[in-house]
Length: 61
Image 1 (cartoon, one colour):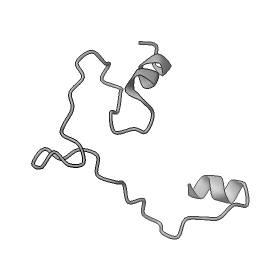
Image 2 (cartoon, one colour; image 1 turned 135 degrees about the vertical axis):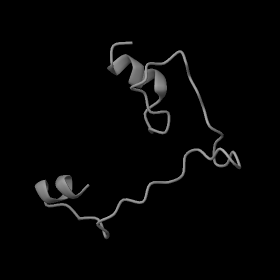
Image 3 (cartoon, one colour; image 1 turned 180 degrees about the vertical axis):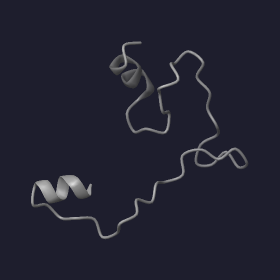
């Protein structure tokens, strides 16, 4: 975010630290239970905002 803002004369973030939202919680299952997709290659991040199938296409799977 910083690099893009500085390169484009955009607004820099208010903080130096990115606070990632929780995606999985193995104790409570909220906001999501832990997922395992054995049909996908290990390079896929299910917590990404890009759907797993689109990621798999991007890495040639």
